Length: 159
Image (tube, rainbow, N blue to C red):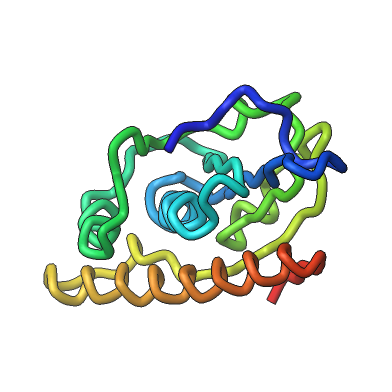
């Protein structure tokens, strides 16, 4: 699925809801959220993700997405600066650091905050680290389900 040039959100009956997920490095949590909402929300959503600092997508992020059967092609770490001046219906921060350091984007709609532990910070054996990525993926998937349900009903909330 690709991001289109259609205008995001708005009052048009067929308009897609535009969402930007922001995390510090755009390497795990925000990438997971992007892939999940694209898959679960389908054509009803225009989805992007970005970081306050750019790095690279973590291999364990890609592994967890692939295990879930989600496409990973084209996923990359992006700076929020790529999206300055572009309107979004929702800007959702997925970590406390991004919430504090993410500037207000012009044209930004509703801002939500979904705090999740950083699976990249987990040290130890590969199995322990992979388990952390899976836990965070599951938590984000639950949030995405609620978000879709809430936006379908015209409601949204941080929790």
